[in-house]
Image (cartoon, rainbow, N blue to C red):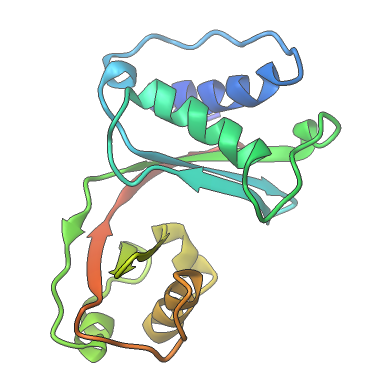
Length: 182
């Protein structure tokens, strides 16, 4: 567990939300003012270093503690890419909580402009085009370190072709503070 009180509280809150589904008693969470302030978070679940679920919020619309708990539950039981987490999987599942900074518009003149200005390992990116929208957390740079590859996969996630570009595409970027169980 991290020594940072906020990180510890968020990880415990996330695990409590998942464990409650299986009737596990909650572990105590240190009350902190940040937990009651609005916050946007993503909760990522992994097993043996492989993704097992990831759900989050891009905008702060509820207290941070509630946001983390809801996203943890959704990552475990509602991520359409995976079957619901079983109780047997819980001990080998690691939780990571990412606290997002507010997204800022990232106006670009072209895809080449975007690729030149992206900050690998730093920027989380939201891509919007019409009704399509997708995001990658900054952690995704670890598996997609090249900006062109990062952008192509984000477009695919949004349901667009990897080589698609249109002047109507809107980008926004954000950063995260993250904590992960060991």
